[in-house]
Image (tube, rainbow, N blue to C red):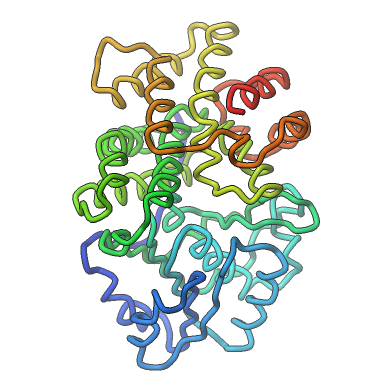
Length: 381
């Protein structure tokens, strides 16, 4: 067995830890760039806590290639020497890409996967501090930033192990204000990442341990966090599940759910976590069926049984029972179907073709045929 493992240089997990951010940033430089989301009032407390006013980069929508080029120019012009990103997954992704492109000055498409050349970074990124306010993407410890390529209509990554943030500050108190829909969407994203990394063809003993722990915490606490957003114990569990999912996906691969999510997220404005949730039980069933048909001795079939037991707590359950449990959870959380997310059936063939070319699909435990990919979409419609 051969594998490598990378994660953030430092992870701080503590209620109230966000109060340390200005002092942590001062360890790296004197001219911070603060990346925030759509509502500046929610992050004014951090902006005002710096000794000197930081450069503010506001990401009101999911980042795309055009907005990123403008933001990178602002960071360079401001001579920023440290990036702090406070927000959801899109904000954290923006911060990571900004820190990378501030010091690597070729055209953005030189570095992007799939639609670009995927050229490796030649210079270290600016120091980066990631502070998530949602519990789902795990972006605070991942090695990539996801952007929408406007001219290609697909979400793609800029990826490098050097893009893993220097410090990840996880303060569960920052997630207490998340509404039900965001809690459900981001939480299902974390659960999807844990499951896909656990059955990935690139999993390893370290990611396996993280995935097992994360899956059980999400199974226990996702519904509870959605029911009562002030349940700090459930919020802590989901922050851990998200953190572990990010570490796992950065060191293993994902699978068909995220393979589909890339082109869907590029063409339709549905939340990423909702797309993942709507697809997850159907991808699990398709993978189990394909494994039993083509590689019945695969150890991944046992892993799907383990997942079912971890989710339900019932040791008598079989592999498909995990998919049933997830589908029931999605119903209880109000997760819409693909049709409800605005994904029309007329686009299924095109989406299946695009999904097959994504980097995430390469981690799926078995290669799915075009017909099997179409059947997943039809089942999720």
